[in-house]
Length: 431
Image (tube, rainbow, N blue to C red; front, side, top):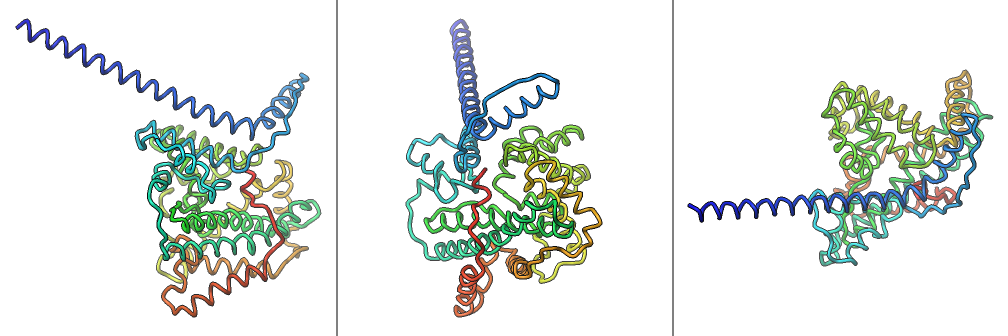
């Protein structure tokens, strides 16, 4: 009897020690997690937001009649800092959650963080998806290489023909918006919408295609967002790697859409405001985020935010009238929000919008570039035909003879050379 009690007592002590060790280990892991988050966000905050917070701090003191001076820093923003910061954060958080084992190969980890195709502008890759690929022996696969080259070709077309041409007119119209009619400003917003889409999704296609040449699989970052039928669908198709990052590491930990109405509204605004702030240290980006939150809320509260999961008009050549109306409505809302994204400041954006909704909206536009508008139309037709693939020309012509396929590819290459716009920097390099 005494020996049994002694063994039980010994077991209890052992279990208690194990429990304490587990608690200590978990506490240690949590400390390392917060150190990692603090360091990463601290570096990002210093380089990207130091002057923004300083200027607004000084303005706040001035508003209350107090003078405060501070020295702004001429900080050179490292290219792509927002992207690789979030990529390394996902690594740390996934290890803490037990989804990933810590990397023991420093070279493999460094290659994951600095993988050159997507280093400067994404897609933002998860460690659980990309890191294991560095430990697999590489071998050349002809089919993957062909697919990668096709995606690079389409990405170059998006950037050089669509984005760069649209940029010339968008830049001019936004820079001279106070002198132009509302109808011309609508064209300026339209050109910017296709500039930013062609620019960023074009870069993503080039990055994904280049990675595929080396045998790496990067996640799709855009899925024909301008064919969306509601703003919720748009955000499932636009900058997918960032949207899902915020969903998994911010929105869901906050409670997502599981809480009461007040919590759902709070979480929605938090996620969109952070998304806006991620894009840049300017109030225009924050307003852009708030505007998208306002678009999204009615869908969330009416539980219609998951209504359009499938591809629009799947298996059909022509969409229904209902789908057309929804796509035009969603694109119009997106166009309005892009004005804040592109404007120099809030005042500029407001003046731009008020001019659009003035009587000059019905004037003949001062600028009406037929060639660029036809290029956008042709681009949309190709995107519509190929919308069931991961990029527009992935499956177009695959069932036809080689001569027809190569005619398509050489035609796109010729269009890149013939219709190329003046060289423009990638927009998302600044983020």
